[in-house]
Image (tube, rainbow, N blue to C red; front, side, top):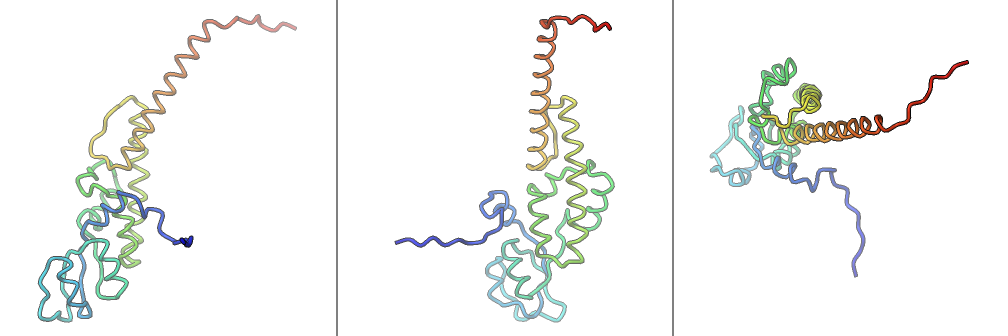
Length: 193
C-alpha cells in the first residue's frame, strides 16, 4: 500500500542546470566551530585545530548551505561574482563573456545569494538582475537584426537569443505571406460622398 505524501521542494529541484551548478565550489571561511568531519568531504585533511581567524577553504555549493546553516562559517564571493566584477557588469554587461566566468552564471549566482550574508547577497542579486536585463536586451536585439550566432552567452541567454531568432523567422514569414496576399487582394474604390 502506498501513501500519497506531498513534499515541498524548490522549483529547480529537478533542474539539471541547478544540480550541476550546485557542484561548483564556493570560498568559505570556516570558524573554530566547524566539525572536523567536514574536511574529508571536501578532500582536505582536518587541521589539528582552527584558530580564531578561521580557515579558508573551497567547498561545493551543496555543502556550503549546510555549513552556513550550521553557523560553522561564512561564504564569500567566488571569482566572477565579487564587487569588481559586479561593478563592471552593471556598467556594461556586454564587456564580459559570462560563460567563461561560470557556465551556469545565473543559476549559481542565485544559489549563492541564498547562502551568503544579506549584506553580500543584496548587491549580488541587483548585479545579477541588471546583467540579465542588459544582456537579454542586447541578445534579443541582435537576433531581431538577423544575427544567427552569439559568443560568450550563458545557457539562459542563449535560450532568449534563440526565441528572438525564431520570432524574427516567424515575423519574416508572416510579412512575406502578407505581401503575396496583398497583390492578390481586390482593390477597393475610394469612398466618395
